[in-house]
Every structure is written in structure tokens, then in C-alpha cells.
Length: 293
Image (cartoon, rainbow, N blue to C red; front, side):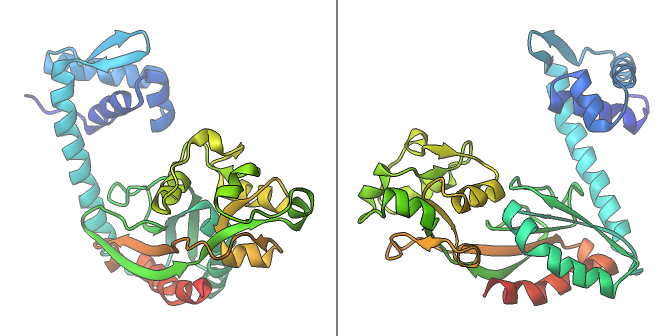
């Protein structure tokens, strides 16, 4: 096979993963004609058809599926080269991208990162508030703060501690609806849950209660909006004890043993040799445990 531009493979991967030229263009921040031209050039150079048009977009042909595996391996190798090069940087300047859950990114990290930026004025921080798992290897983030232990290889992982979780409601809700006397009685109340996430249902299952999505009368996946709904008196829900106490929420059935949430700080091991990433990682490693107490 003749040599070809790596950008052609990048556009091919974007279409394969996004399902359409328009979505690939948005993901790559290119124009749709550019994406189409790249795919066409790649097909001509390979002498093969890589996509078939379907009602829902573009699907890979057999050749496209085989190529995708190799293209993904090449992308991972390119990311590793970037990581190795980045790891040689010794300047305390530039950008560090941090991803964390919506709750941690909203209520914990801003104050800490503000302190850091005052100490290091040449540093810049990108904070991504999301509950999805960012891929550190592919440079979607340099550092991650997560409530689940990452499973990716080649990561440095430190356990920061854990946060207590309980059931809470606003006093305004309890004044109107009363307080449940047992976990079974809670389902006679308005219970807050998540929409697509099943984490609360899995937690209830561990306590011996099988519940359905429809058992939660109010459902929302955004954790900050979930907390604000509790404060507004919508109903009863699970949240971090420290956050609930700081906002005047009232414990409901505090005797229920809800497992605490572990907090993990992670970075790619090669990025740990970057001075700016190492500085941010060490800063968070020293201060996050105190914030979780």
C-alpha cells in the first residue's frame, strides 16, 4: 500500500465513530466537504469501498471494519508519541486539562484551582465537568478525578479518600409530606433518581431492594441540578453528606447503611514526568483528601 496522509485516516475514523460526515466534521472541527474528500481520497488510494450509505448514516463495509482496527491502533500509537514528547516538558507554563464529576467540578475543584493559579500565574487550567469517563491515553484529559477506579492501563492512580452519602430532603418537603419511617415507606414519597444512569438503582439493589427507573418520580442525570432539586423541596434523594449539611438539608433514615463513594486521582504515567502536570497532580493529591474530610 502506498503512503498516505495521516489526516485521511483521522477523517475515516471520525466518520466510522460518529456515523455521518456531518457529525465527523463537527468532531474534527473541519468542513463536511473536507471530511468527504478525505474519505474519497483514502478509498481511491486503497482501491476499496470503506462505507455503505444506510438510512441512519454510514456503516462500515467489511474492509472498512478491518481498517478501523488498524487505524485505531495507529491513533493510540500517535497519542503515545505525544505523551512521551509532552513528558519531557519542564516548564511550569501552559494548559493542564482536568476532568471531574459535575459535583466535584462545581463544589470542590474551583477553590483549589484558584489557589493554584494564584501560585502559578503562567499555568492555565481547563476543567471539564462530566460524569463520562475521559480517555487519558487519547489526551481527552491530563488528570481525572473520579468516583470509580479507572480501568485503563498505564495510569497512575491514587485513592484520595471517600465521601459519605446519605438520604436527604428539604425541611419544606418534610413539612408537606412527612418523613418515611422505613426504607419501604420511602416509595410513598417523591424520590429523586437519575434518568439514564443506573447508579442509584444498583445501590438500592446492594441494599436488597430491586427498583425500577419508573419508581423515581423525578429523574435527572445532572448531579448539580439533582442537588438543587433537593434543596428546592422536590423530594427525597441521595447526596453527599457534607454538601447536604452545608445547604441545610435534613437527613432521612440516617440508619440506612449507604456505602461511601471512593475518590480517585489519576494521570497517565508518562504525563507524570511533565512538570506542569506533575505540579497540578501533586497539588491535588495533597489537598483533595483534606477537602473530603
